Image: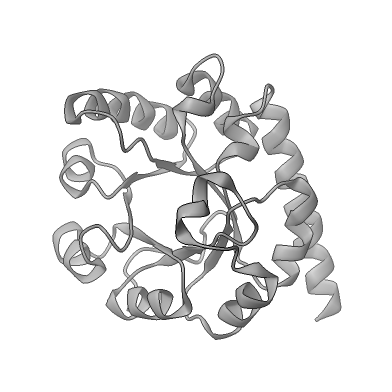
Length: 220
């Protein structure tokens, strides 16, 4: 059973990469939050523990001021220390069931999956949602193998007991097809982090998602 509340999960999941941002990460995050981002993952794996702690504290203040949820990538101890809303886990982190025992039932726990079996395992251990990809080719996810494709995404969404966020190579022009494939939402990095106007980028993405969800409902 999942523990966090998934009925009101935002459909846009923003994942950070400060190496893509200009002028700096906090500027981009505030612009994205102003535009409507309400679920954010702080994913800066190369930072030292002290630097990550300092950054996480600043990001938490930002997310709280906009009523958004903050997840930390694999950092259970830091999530507890700063009072984050939860964590994003993967195959190289703490197990989902162990994180659930440590963080409690109210924590939001996501899992980064690259196969249907990983999604099934995470769901059975108590994950609230999973990201799945890469759906399309993207250099940042090339290490995980070739793109999964829309057919694999659709098959997974048809059988998964938890919400699935499409990840990898997602841009505004591809939102409609991943939503039509059954994705609960999209997880984005460069489509916002690398944009010169992140506020405008988020507004466009949210508009595309609203339209796609409405069109899908009308076909059911």
